[in-house]
Image (cartoon, rainbow over all chains, first blue to last red; front, side, top):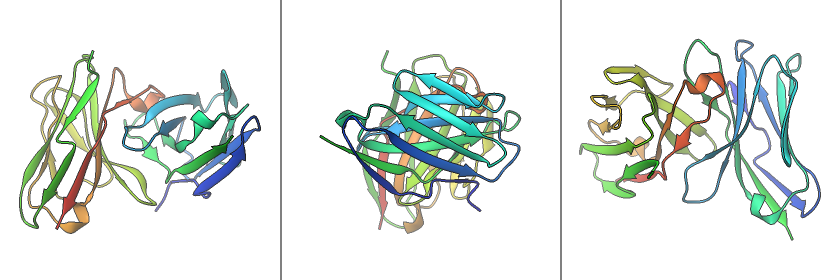
Length: 112
Length: 115
């Protein structure tokens, strides 16, 4: 029972263009959502998060959008850079459990 | 600060062997957790701890034990290794509960192969 799903295993975009990574969830109790980035042979690093009381959060080139009615969130990277090439994981949690549930990950390749 | 450290980086075990994966953090974080990463499965929570002496199960706890005797250390024990436990294991820590949108800091991972 995959509560957090990233249905696109991979995405390839040109440098300078927008990258859009998508994530769907099934548990309506989730109230926090996070994105992590992971390079090969390293641990994941935190990118950006959003609370369920918001529908958008920005941090520099990264913006996360949350659509609660559709149970869908997306990460926009503008402009994309070759250094953004990595695996991106979305994660969700409900405040009363202390547990993060991760999606399967999407591998982003940004071509120069 | 070293952040979150994990040892060993690589390990090969035979079925039935036991071992302990070490995790330490020097950020005085109360919250620590263990994940495993498998292809196509993302990261799955094995066990977590909200402070010294307090642990709880995650999504996939079977076959693993943990204890938290100090704030700094959170070892993961494989009791009797099975090929299904072949995976990359990550330890993470955070100042507050990750569930409230707080950043977790991850270690570099331990790649475990069980033959």
